[in-house]
Image (cartoon, rainbow, N blue to C red; front, side, top):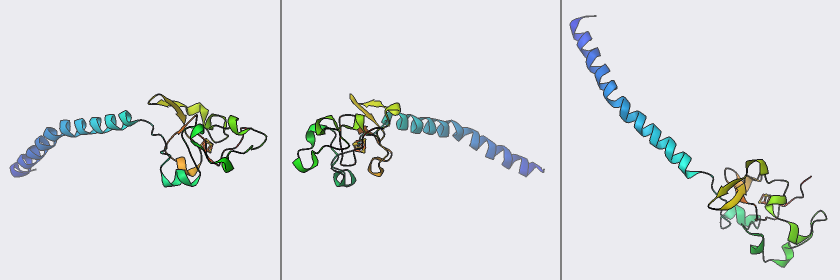
Length: 125
Ligand code: SF4
């Protein structure tokens, strides 16, 4: 390595060392923002949620045609918390609302309210 190459290497390494703390701060902030965001509730106004008549509260389902008995379970007793697709083991609180992931595609990456309901409701085995 000649003198010119040595000086170039020193300048390059000094520059990298100078920006590393900035990169580390940006990465920490990015990670912190993600963690702060937390789980997101399915929005009943979302087109996919509407397609399955999802409501965050069982009482929001006012269409009488949907209020039927399913698998021997009365309409009044059908809520996400008692649905086969509701993952109670991953239940969280989102703004004071108990919610958990639902395995239906419309809820992918989000959580549904335990008090909710949709037309895919199925009795827990
Ligand atoms: S499939 Fe079950 S858990 Fe998921 S939104 Fe519908 S009723 Fe709730």
